[in-house]
Image 1 (cartoon, rainbow, N blue to C red):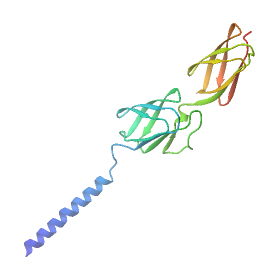
Image 2 (tube, one colour):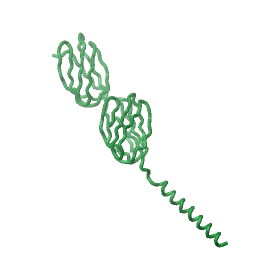
Image 3 (cartoon, one colour):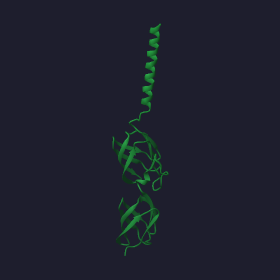
Image 4 (cartoon, rainbow, N blue to C red):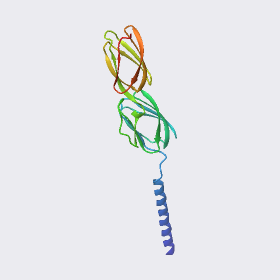
Length: 194
């Protein structure tokens, strides 16, 4: 009878030890972390990440994807809305990268949500061809390089990376160069070069 009692006590002790050790494992931090990418733009997002592991992520326009990279700090190169940007990304905790519509702002700042527009700073600009009798070709070089063509009197809006540009334009059988700082809703008015 004593032997049965000891076996029961030993069995219960082993079960208790197993349960305690399993609970300890359940509360340990995983090597991987949840990383969500919400692409609310109308363009594909590519994200190259270098850190504890190297990853190349692609999220289609309007899609949300969940990834589980290794925890840690990453150097990233992001391409979205026609622009590249480099930054750092802390993935030691759960994060969500939100890519807003091109040229607009993302969610309010928080510890868990990252606004991609803080990294890729895009702005909406308008270019006007004030030359009434001539087509115009405009070449902008700066944070990005763009070539636009306008009919006489035409104006159009574009989303470009914010920053300083050198603008060379051709119209009225002549050309000229000027500087332009692309900021939100800024208008670039061009007429026949003098």
